[in-house]
Image: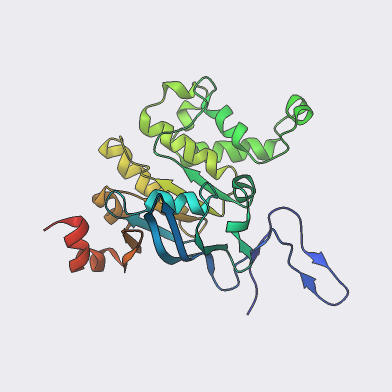
Length: 274
């Protein structure tokens, strides 16, 4: 079986006998990009996560649902290093233990997170927002003398098309609608070539048309990136029609195709309602 490895910071060290994987390379040889195993987090005696375990396949689009207080935000906090787990492990691929990394290191490894409120540079143009988000040297001198090459410009224009903002590229981001700002922030994350995108209620405050366009965008990313979408909008989740994980009281209550989850008696009882 061939080993698929995503290179991040540096290449593979070569020895006289074999190739040794650099510690910042993501080993996807088993087809799984994220393992959350037995994670427990307590706040003042309250267990926000209670022996939580699940896995995300490379290139998978996974939806996570559950009632308020189910542990969805805490789950993302642990994956991104914002919150330390009391117990358990979180692995990126086969070899990288995220619980031993800082928030900055985890972001560098290719885990992008989008919060509910869009975070864009409103006084900068749409194009400039994508340019600023692009991976590359960020030192003072690098910034002063940095110039886009034609390949980078083409990449930004391709992203503008993907997020449906090609006609607004010169305008300040502050003039965009709420939904368009959400798309711009997603585009900014994509410019960083993420391994995984964690998206917290990305359609909150969107119009019906914007929500439909967001579903199309996410489906177009499937297979190219791994997406974990936390949502309350069940119609939106159903439109993605992929594997769904239901959290309740800090652990997995049910997991599987949307139809199976919708018909699960416990899910109906604690979340969907009768």
